Length: 73
Image (spheres, rainbow, N blue to C red):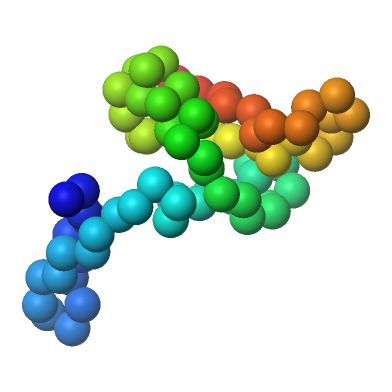
């Protein structure tokens, strides 16, 4: 089980994560979109972390149908 831990009302909770439950907001337009398994692997393969990742939904780009990965250093 992969999960995140968060505190709610002073009590720690474990929240399970499933591959189809990971979302992001486009850094350009703010549109929410789902991060599919292919993009999850690409993010983790690139640097091994979701930290510092900014994604675009492909807006303002006529040829892109998939989200665009942009790493912020």
